[in-house]
Amino acid sequence: MPRVGVLLSGRGSNMQALVEQAAGYEVVLVASDRPEAGGLASAREAGLATFALSPKGIGKAAFEAALDDALREADVAVIALAGYMRLLSPAFVARWVGRILNIHPSLLPAYQGLDTHARALAAREREAGCSVHLVTDELDAGEVLGQTRVPIEPGDTAETLAARVLVAEHQLYPRVLKDFVHR
Ligand code: GRF
Image 1: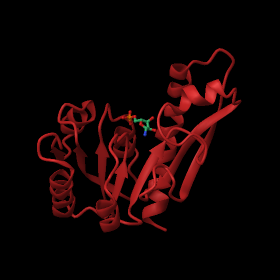
Image 2: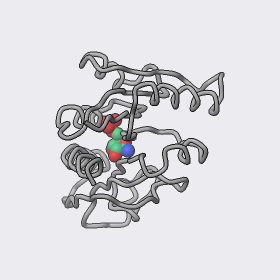
Image 3: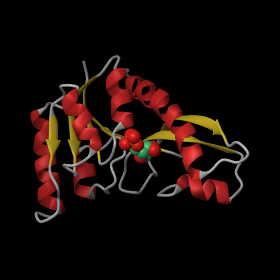
Image 4: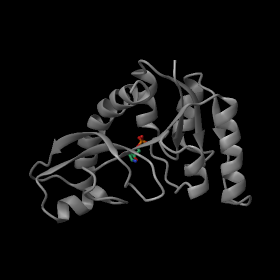
């Protein structure tokens, strides 16, 4: 069974979806750059192994070296970023090239980066969505592995749209990850 490490900085709802809907892969480690991340607490409650370390004070290189060690010790084959809010260094990405996935709340290549929903609403888009893609050195720019389209409703705010897209994220990510580890 392919072993997956999830990397997060926040509440971790996508991590939970990956764990709850795991089929054809196994989440063996949940790691975070924010020891106070809600997703880490949920992972611990679910009995998952966790790794928590802040880069503050030790620097990015030392943080990534420790993270890399933890992922290798857990014998992780694929890394799934799930609300990981830091850019991985080109050196880290090179060590895991082709084996890091991310979920982004837009129909890539549209709306890369932050504040996707607010920008889509400001542009009067009629459709939003989410994408799972391979991670490269360039932000939100690797091969798209799967997408779900989500309608924008009249009166939507960034918050209501984000909530609707998040439901789609939780369905898309486990399915794409399963297909990816078996492709
Ligand atoms: C999601 O919207 C995801 O698309 C983006 O960050 C958010 C993470 O949410 N990359 P959660 O921590 O998985 O709940």
